[in-house]
Image 1: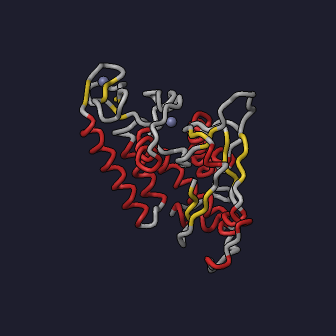
Image 2: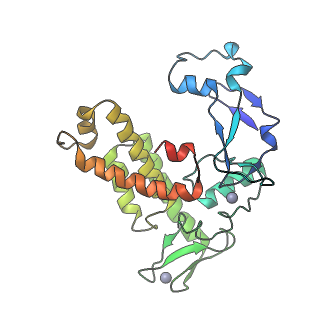
Image 3: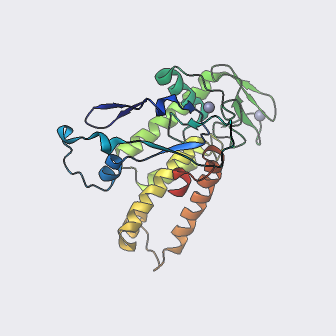
Length: 259
Ligand SMILES: [Zn+2]
Ligand SMILES: [Zn+2]
């Protein structure tokens, strides 16, 4: 396994490299001392010459009870909200790996519908990829078959919109608008909507740290003292995100704990 940080150096972890991959792993890697220091801004001006091996010791911990004989797994694409198809593509390109974990074998992403696209032929139906994303997609409800290119066009358009919003600072209103617009095309639990939701939650989280006054600026509304309405909206977001993580990151995981 290679660990790459901003100013380009690499570490090799021969023991951890021996762990298998799963999109629903039973282990997580703890942040290294270096990562923790950088996160808390202890290191203002990183000096590559000052890097020590001790700062980069990686620790893998199990996140659930493990019985003897269980294969120990970590996620080589540590982005739990990313869609199954996108994860498979990253694994194929970067790790030359074809994952066959339960999530990758499930057309519905284990019932989360994180890749499902609305069917244009029937109201309740959703299009899902067949065995491979490159094959046609079909509606679970009416059986309509759609070629994969037209699905990818929708996803590329949405990703372009999201990238544009984030480049412009990723404001709350824009993130909310994206979510509403995408719900006309994708399943409400589609991974792009979840990612936009997570970005919004991070924005609010960061702002709350600066107090309610700053929260007013984010939302551009007058808040009551507790901001109860907005906390309630964020609570609903977090519940939806947590439901997804219960499937993709079960156990005592950072992803769930940090929500
Ligand atoms: Zn997988
Ligand atoms: Zn349909």
